[in-house]
Length: 288
Length: 152
Image (cartoon, rainbow over all chains, first blue to last red; front, side, top):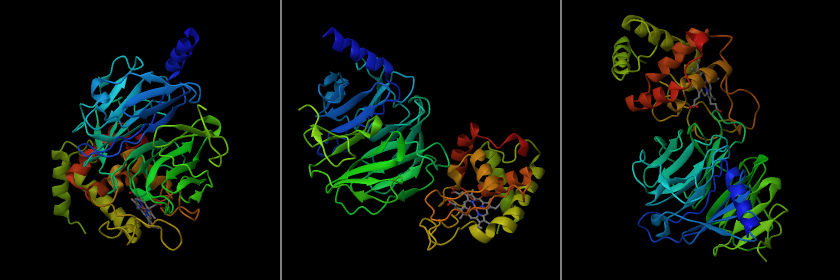
């Protein structure tokens, strides 16, 4: 027990840019299905999962989960995403409709709103910059994309976003951007991409696969990107310019993330964790 | 094409929102610099970006060669999303979209053609094509990313 607790604290103290792009709970007001969400905190070496209005972390690849307390509003069920910056900062962020953006530096014991500069607390997607721990991105419903460069103290509207509602947002440090990186935006119909100067959304490759759920990229090789859809998993080796279908096991995956060494993690609709070491071809239940 | 009065009015708007374009000098010299910028634009940029900065048709999609066409510089484009530092760099070093199917710089590098001051003038001229709101946004983005010092 003591051992687990100390490993837990160790993991947390390492937490740097944990952008746990955890789940999306749907749009404010709309009784939308709450899908679980998943992200990997590279510094803390932990998985973060948002499921049924609860936040969990696992430091052993999903064998066991430990709950991280959410603020009262979070328990009422609108946390969409959890995220951790990737460097030097023990910050954990959560975001969602009606909870806005909140930050904890004590492993969830206390949460602080960092969304005063946002026009509303109806945040439907959120991510942290891959290498800049204080740069945050939030999508406000029916409004657009906001950026903070001071860990949420102030926010600035950068873009009204693509016309389709963004469900998930992910910052990548893939090369080729005019600025510092790229943003993947997952909508129900497609994955779109913009440089982080917000100078234009581009479609990614043709993906005729029904509903799109989530996107993830290889931390060691950001051009390698995966997207999970109604019709299974797809992979790109060039940042999303073209997608190839991965002949997986056919189980539905609604959330996706990558750990170092290319380990893929996914959640099914019930929040069950699966792991693949062979680029998505075979999967094992993580806590079996 | 912008006449002198448009430029004067634009200069007035720019300074009124606290963003004097070329910094420093008295009004008349700012206006002159904008006129210089417009001349440079018409001579070196208009062939691709359009006489009024309207860009090429279907500029948001790759053309038959797999290249992104020259975008507009006005409110409908995204030139205003770039800081002064970035705009200077694009004009000076050139640029190609990383997803283009060719390797050439579709936006040519002008550092052998334009002096640093001319590069700055033509970028400042582009600002006259934006809305006041866009100018304000871009001025804020440029606070931490101004023109390089050698262009003064």
